[in-house]
Image (cartoon, rainbow, N blue to C red; front, side):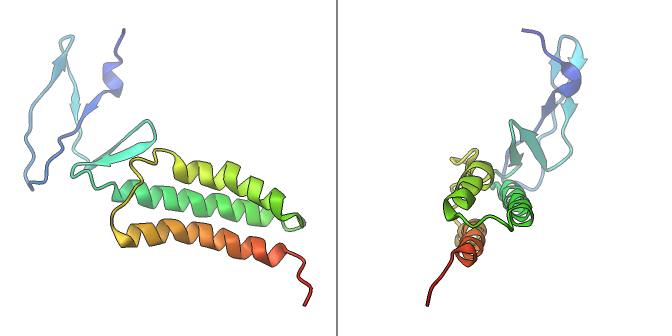
Length: 132
């Protein structure tokens, strides 16, 4: 397996304020030490403390963006099952990617993630033909 050294980075996971700095060498090339506090790998954002707050914020932002796209482009849709299919295929797939990481234990994160779903439900219920 060939390794693209220019795309390789290192990150140190610790709860301490000071990081352990070490230069890693592969095939006589030094791998870049990631001075950032987070790194993205396979769509999951890892931070140095493994709290995943930045990843949760990104997922929530993407969820709202896709939900806004659905709302703008489905104003003429009246079938709630069509809206549900759009939600499941576009919004829920974004929010459920790497769900094992996105299993937050802080109540604030749980409420913020569920707020995207509640926003869609309010929109879908407004589209239903109600008879009083």
